Image 1 (tube, helix red, strand yellow):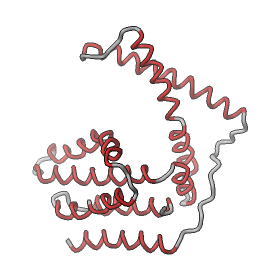
Image 2 (image 1 turned 135 degrees about the vertical axis):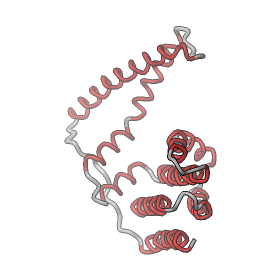
Image 3 (image 1 turned 90 degrees about the vertical axis):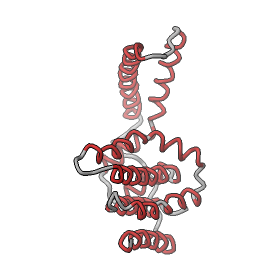
Length: 220
C-alpha cells in the first residue's frame, strides 16, 4: 500500500493539474480521467461504492457545472468542462478516502505539519459521525412508530422539526462525550502512530505519475 503522505501529494497534484486545465479542453480532461480510473482498479474499489459516494457529491458538481451558464459569454462547452473538472476532483478525493484508513490519513497530515487543530477536528468528526447516525436512527424510528412517513412537500415542516431535534440531541450527546473524554485525561490532542519513512520506490512512482499528468496537460 502506498504511503498516505504520497497519496495526499498525488491527490493534491492531480487536483491542481485538473483545476489548471481550461474547461473547454475536454480532450485533456478525458486523458486525465485515466488516473482515477486506474487508481480505482489498482485499489480494488468496488464500482458501486465509488458511484454511491460520488452521488453524495453530485449537488456540488452540478453547482460547479451551472456556474458557466450563469456568466455571459460562456456556453455549454464550458459547463461540460466544469462538470468534468468537478467530477475528476471529487473522484480523486473519494478514492483517497476509500483507499486510506482514517488513522493513516490523520498521521500523514500530522507528519506534513498540518495545523494541530485541523487534524483534531478531522479526527473527531470522522470518529463520531456514527454518534450522529445513531441519533438520526432513533428519531427516524420514533417518527415511524407514530405513523410518520414523508410523502409530499406539505410534510416539510415536520422534517424541519426532526432536523432541529436532531441538532439539539447531537449537541447534548457531544457534551456528554466531551465530559467522558475529559474524565479519561483527554488533553486536546489525538494519539497517532508515527509515520514510517518514505520508501524510495513509491516516491519515484508517485512523482512519475504526477510528471506524466503535468506533461499531458502541457503537451495537449
